[in-house]
Amino acid sequence: MDEVDLSRPIDELLHTLTRPRLWPALSGIDLTATASDAARPREHHAHDDRDQHAPRRQLEALGDITTRLRELDDRHGGGELTVRMVETHLNGAVSLLRDTDLRYSGAERQSLLRVAADTVQLYGWLQYDAGRLAPAQQSMLRGIRAATEAGDDLGVINQLGMLAYMAANTGSPREAVQLAEHGCVLARSSPAIVRSRAAARRASAYAAAGDESRYREAAEEARSLQNAPSGPKHLYYYSPEQLNAEMGQALTLLNRHTAQRRTRQRLAAEAAQSLTPLAASAPDVSYQRSATLHGAHLALALLITDDLEQAASAVSVACSRLDEVHSKRCRTLLRHAHSALLYREGNEWARSALTHLDAAGLGTPGMT
Image 1: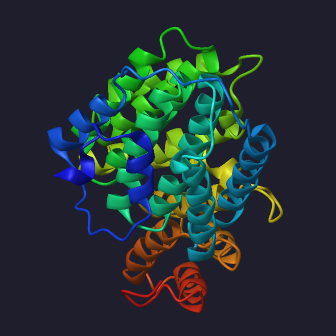
Image 2: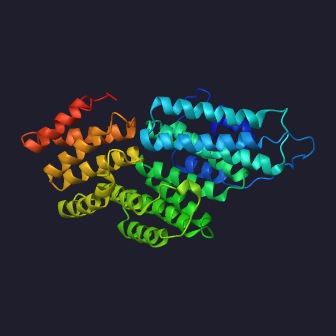
Image 3: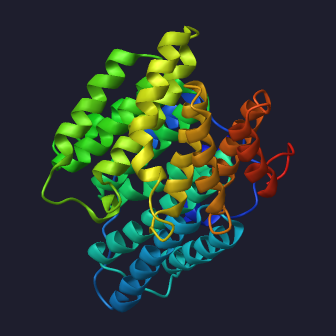
């Protein structure tokens, strides 16, 4: 299928990304082999440095815009307006790559490709947050290819981890493990915080696969490596609180693999403890989407422990963020909480939580 033929020139691959397509979601070897192909180094023709029009200021401006758009994603999530803004920005970067009147040195082209790869990664993450897995996968695969061509090894590792996270959370645990392990192999000589980030993705993948011992091994590795003095800009958000919340979310994936009530309650209680700090963060915190996402997971974990009072509180806080956070992923999780609460609507705390969910438009299937 030519949509995942990564042998084409990178500017063409990126140019077609934002054109309307009915892509199927990838799984199995189609996903893992294509990701491996995207991360495979290729030979490139040298660029002529003569008569160049070096757009250094333009490249700096494009990078600054990408940073500001990341802030919108952190606060608002994958709403349609943010997706369109990132798409417009991506098209601008790609148009520079495709402009035959411009001459770049090899270093300048690398810089432009890095900006494009960063923007494609953001575009894919927003598509995933908006509930569109297929274009999210296509974006990440092209982003991996762009980062590889730009010589941005850390960008490749980051996007492989994101692709693994998507697979872990959409019913493809085996593929998640393979993608996460690939990222960890590439990260072996990277800074400690990059290896921590890769190990955390591996932990989520093994949790989704139901392997508790490997989940805990990878989670411990991620925590032990996180206290590094510095790291790449794209890991600006990767705090101990974020890592703990992600490991709590991973425990909710692990919990799906057991029917034993005592084990489910043990895992859910541990997940709730890890999720609570980030989920309870202040209303003006920069990372509103993350707080909402983990708040929804917290509510679901607390429902397993039968702590309806705290579950209702988690639902209330998460719903209070929805005027600002436009994330289909978050709303879908809260809708799952609504379904679980309906079985307990005889309880006053359950009724309170249902009231908040209904007011947020999350009580009717199909509503967003």
